[in-house]
Length: 418
Image (cartoon, rainbow, N blue to C red; front, side, top):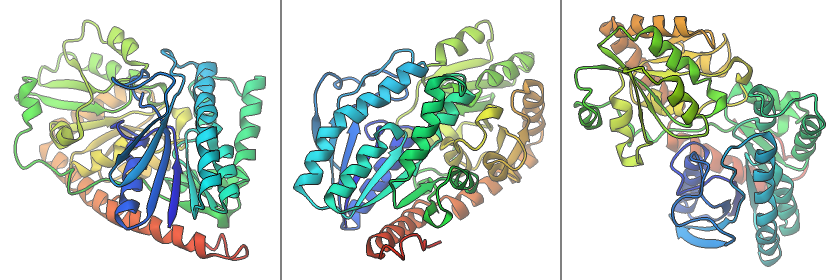
C-alpha cells in the first residue's frame, strides 16, 4: 500500500501523539508499504520550536524508512483558546500546498489523518479524493470538547458553536473514523459517525523497551532519592490533566519524610505548578527523559499518579497510562466510575474522585505502606499491558484494517474487522 499520514505531531517529538504517529508510520514502512508523512516543525510539549527548527521553512527528511515533510507553524508561547485555533489553522495552511502537490503527483491507497489537528482534516480528506485514496481519520482526543472542559473556549460563544459544527462536518468526509478506547468510540457514534464506519485503534507500548526493572533505577540514584518512596507523574504539563491535585496531595503529605513527588515533563502549566509547589521540599521537577531512559524513569516510581479533570473524562485516554502499566508499578488515578481510565486501572491500582487531593494522598499512602499490595497490583499492571497494549498486535491489526478498507467496495466499506 501507499500511505500518506497527516498529523501535527511527529518525531523528533518524544511524547504523546508523536510517539504513536511515528511508530505507526515506521512499522508500516518495515512491512514493505510506502509511507509519507506531512507534519509540523516539532514544538511539543514545550510550546516552542525545538533547537534547529522553526522559521518559514518546509524541511524534508527520511527517518525510519519514511519520507517526512515538516511544515512551518505558528507556536504560541501561551496557548490560549484563540491562539490554539490559530496554531492549528497555521498547520492547515502550510500543509495545504504540500498535500495538494502530493495528491496531484501520485496515487495513494490511504490518506490517514491524525486529530489533533482536526482543522487540517478536511484538507487531508481533499487530498484523499484527489489522489483516489480512501480517507481515514484517527481521533487521539476530542480537542473541541477538551477546550470546553479546560476553559480555553466556551461552548456558548460563536467560536464554540462553530467549532462543534466544524467537528461534525469534518468527520463526514472520511471512510473510516477511529479512536483509542471503547468510550471514545461510543462518543464518535454520538457525534453522528455511523457505527459501521468506526474502529477502535488503540495506542500501544513497546513491551520489549519498557519493562519492570530488575535492578535499582540509576535515575533515582542520580536524583539522590534512593531511600525515598517516589510518587511519579511523567508527561505533558497541560490543563486537561488536573495536575494541581498532585501538588495539593504533596502538601497534605509534607510531613512524610519517606515520600517524594517527582513531576517529569514540560508544558504550559509548569510555571503555575512550580509556583504552587514553592516551599514544598517533597516536590521535585525534572525534564522529560529521552526514550532510552524511559524504563529508568518509570522504574524509579513506587507509585504512578495519573490525575484527570472530571470534565475531560473520555475526551482522551492519556497515552502515559500505557507505559505506566508496562513498567509494572501500581497507579493511583483520579477518574469517575466506568470511564476509560477507571476501567484500565481496576486491579492495577486505586481510583479516587477527580480533584479530591485528600483522597489522592490517602490512596498513595495506602499503597506505599503496603508493599505486598503494591507488588500484586504492579504485576497486574504489567499483565494488563501485555494483554491489551502490545505494539505488535495493535499495529498488525491496523495493517489488516487498512488492507480491508482499500479492498472494500463502496457497499462493503464499513464492514469493519474486529
